[in-house]
Image 1 (tube, rainbow, N blue to C red):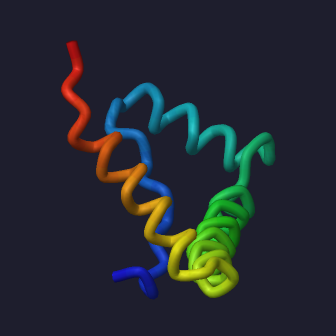
Image 2: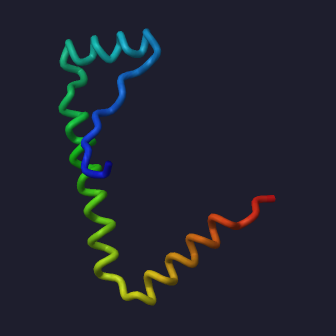
Length: 76
């Protein structure tokens, strides 16, 4: 699923959808913005892998322990 490229969803509200269509038609907004989002997501997915390669096993373990503690921390 990470390899799939998803386009941003169109608004479900009829008024918002109409405005987005008008914006695209008038050139105020374009589908190029969607392609920018797609490229940014691809770069972000690569960045996590690259960061993990640079970390030592001890550093990865510390990060994982901190993340687990944050997930299981009880909220009051």
